[in-house]
Image: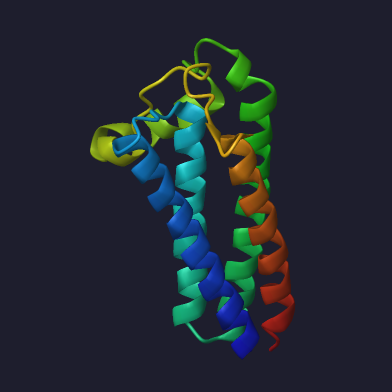
Length: 158
């Protein structure tokens, strides 16, 4: 059960660090996010919160549930990152896409604009970090989180 807590803590830290890096990229390096970028931030925030819940509540059932939900969110993140890379990055507009509707529907862009407001078109937001598209870095982290959450699920025995 301790291993599950350690894995969930690592997941929470990695997810929070990814959002922090995205905010540094936006506010210091002027890499403005599109709706798909913002949706991925939201998914990472939810992953961090659920993983943290699994760390704090030391009950096997809660840790298993948190791990399972983190795994599902990771799969959603994989889908968002792939969609951004294969479709959205080649599109001039993200308006009225699924990502735009989720972010605006939750009113996160109005409530926390410095974090969740899309400020670029999908094509303009197609940037690279060390020669790799940003969304592929995100995809890699989602996959790592997925595998870690599955390991945490297995480690959180009753």
